[in-house]
Length: 118
Length: 113
Image 1 (tube, chains in turn brown, orange):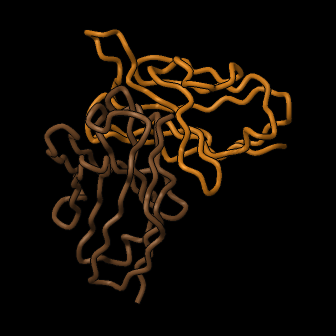
Image 2: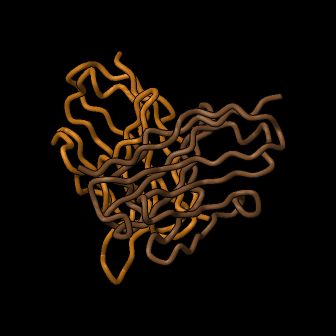
């Protein structure tokens, strides 16, 4: 069965960087695009963008350009989200999400809590 | 951006009764060439990721009980739970995937009365 397994919670100081991983199994990794979704405490999900798992080409939603980087390592079926120059407002749960049809998110990682605090 | 607005923000329904959640998009998500509404519904329980319930506005996701149904077209959509069960307590979100950025509603919290 399809599984997306994310790396564990992170506690970082403002200005630091964090890299979240999302390892896929149960399907051919390059078949489905990988999306990233942020959920701030008590808020609804917010789509951050996606990465084409065939070409590695990322697309970022407005508000997630500059400090956010999507990348892949197809040899280990893993997608990554890196956030640079962390700010307190980046505190949130970050999910990877994918599916057999564009932007219908059948599959979700369990989420990674990133806490930014001095 | 397409703004998704859900109503109500919270809802309390007795066990076994019907629950209806509304979702309105700021522009149509009906794609004329496919005649499909690019609208999905998700259920989220505390500490869990969202779970896909409905896509194409009315198609149930894999393993979703048939008490969940979706309806509507264009800009106005509904999620109906025909007979509320205790395990349905959750926050429900609609999502449009017609155009980027993909956007979600603010959520509707469903509780037992």
